[in-house]
Image (cartoon, rainbow, N blue to C red; front, side, top):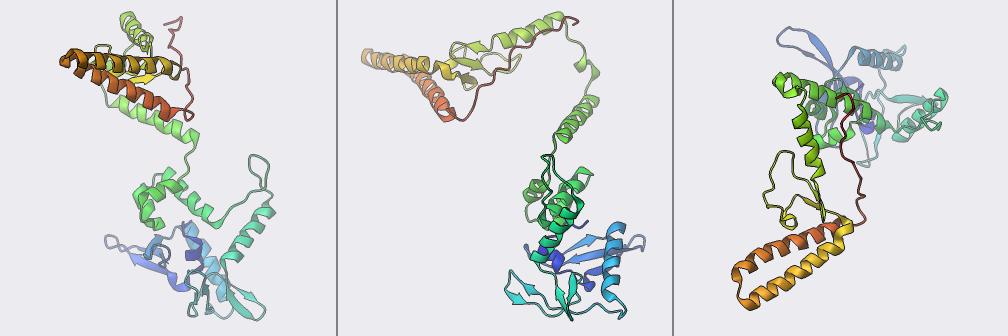
Length: 311
């Protein structure tokens, strides 16, 4: 309910619960004051009704019959110092003493609570959570329910919004639904005629584009409806995706170009040398591209679209 870090949780005191009066309405809202920790920045967390119920139960239990929350000194494992006695919310009685919870104690309590539930994951293994997992769950739940990421960043005390986004889990179903909603919004804002059924000629032209993508030394990635700016001199084109199986052929083209450049320089055909050098640079780049991708990518045959019989 808070998204706080484990160390911030253990530093919460009775004084951390404060209130704020809204200037517009005069309404008083409860706030939870998070002491500086990892980012050394103090921040406030709005207390929801559910969180208020939890905090109220904790404080009532600590007060007991005496009506006061005991002052307890806690050891700061990061700073290696003892903090002064404070009315910590996470304290317990051990014998006749009141002691602050430690990070180890929190982890053990969590492990025992999970074991008592008997819950398992998809593989049938017992659930295992760390306290920090609940911080990630908090961010995921908040953003998926509409909280802007930059607001979640402030609530969590992250210096960089990329850290906040990294905490959010993305599920396949969420990705699909978000994409479908995006397409629906885009269609609603564009002219309806853009989504008409294509004619036979338009569909045939679209299919022909994919049929013409295959060239002798690879695949042309030119966008549909765009002309070839290199007049089909594919070795020069940055849109050519060379086929690894054609590496020997590309090497032969490179060697041939080197020989032709040498001949042109010998004969004084300087105009031809310049064009050949452009082609040579393209061939060498294609070979380098194949070498960089060797062993890192696997070619996937996406096939050619086919028309359905009821078109």
